[in-house]
Image 1 (cartoon, rainbow over the protein chains, first blue to last red):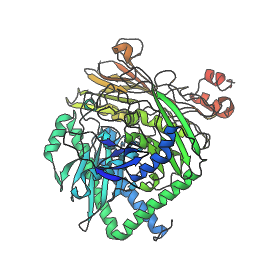
Image 2: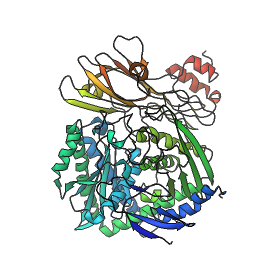
Image 3: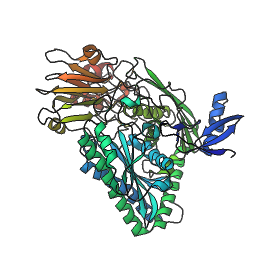
Image 4: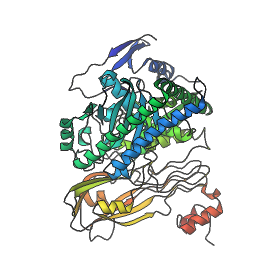
Length: 66
Length: 571
């Protein structure tokens, strides 16, 4: 699975958290950054890239799923 | 069970994990100060390995299923596992970091054995008062998290068994009932020490290698079992949409949508299509939405599956950030845990009704009827605050009626006895009864809601807040398979000398009749709390005649309703 880990660095006054672009859960320390169909997205884990490819993208495109 | 450990030993280790969590909970119940702990049991207890996997969980409060799952893992990741030393306790209540809502405080303690980290013991408990704009910290008209109470990111409240008194003083200064906070938080922290000792005894008895191997095998076993359960559901996409009556700030319904995809041995539960985050506090955190999803799935699958991280692996959840199912900073969310969770869980169940008609239930009352009050007690002069929940009717199933007067399915809490209520607070209970005809009609009838009338005692002023739902027509608990809707909730007031009860909007001009904050009641004023009934299941005219007759005899169903809806005439 191609991609890279990106550490999340915050200042003490930054109290919001970062969500995953696919599932929405909190990413506490590092993001998995991967390119899907030419667009860079920030995921909580490599597994979420698969969910994005297999489920979210087809849904966004309105493709029928089996 | 497979693997290298014999099934008997695996079962013993699994039971030990669960019992350690139960012991933690019982310790809290016996040592906490507030009724919400020792009567309501609004807490959860978990055990984690050092990799952030949950390996044990006791059956306390389902609202915290996901919160307890994510909070420990994310906190350990955020702080770094190496930052934990023996005797530390990390505290946090940040709803955006896995929490269900801000009153729920998590405490996490590492467990070391022979100088090496084994894992973590943790619990989540609802503190009855944590400051903010409303007594009881349930601001039904909050528009930001800052109005909901003191928000605490993960911080060490105990370092190497020494309490961080600077932090304690900061917390005490921001809560209205600091003595209760002191007692309840120390009950949480103390129970961690009990659990830590029990884990160490388990490790002494069986050895670290065996316990760790057993934990791994148990997680794989739970995953396999859950996949088998999912595989038994017909593949397909199942959707459901529901609404809540308003958010407490804007007088407009809020729409939630779920689509459940069953794909072989995995489930995808997608909440896309839900309304954007709302201004009022019914937004769900990610922890609430995930918890509601898991709660529903546990209702539909074999309850014997050991509850550990393995059971969650086959389930993917999508909750768009910035929507009403995944609130982002600084949106309010205190009501999401009590009002939104039960609807979300019932929506997943209703979506799967097409696939699993014999296992599902109609919607339950779906509101915790949050009623919070406080003031100076006339007998002691001390400031008091209390968080009261009311049980409602549960949904009927294909095989039975719904239960009466039960706290929402995310609560698993107990109804507070009248005697406890009256002993501690200056409110007299005038009536506490089941409401006839509140159960949704059906071949199986929805459970009944309750009516409680409270009167403010002499020489007393009480400040009250409420966060209810399902008070308006069209928003009752839905039925299934032809069953009817459950009765509505109500929160009303009768000022001293008035003849009739009125809504708080009529009496005090609140925007929402069911969600309001900081209303001052005086001696002799009365509050009426009606909890809603559950939805019915199946055609009411197909109901067994003996059951209808018994309902009428017991006063659960009126003769008129028996005639009009069930087609049964009183002999």
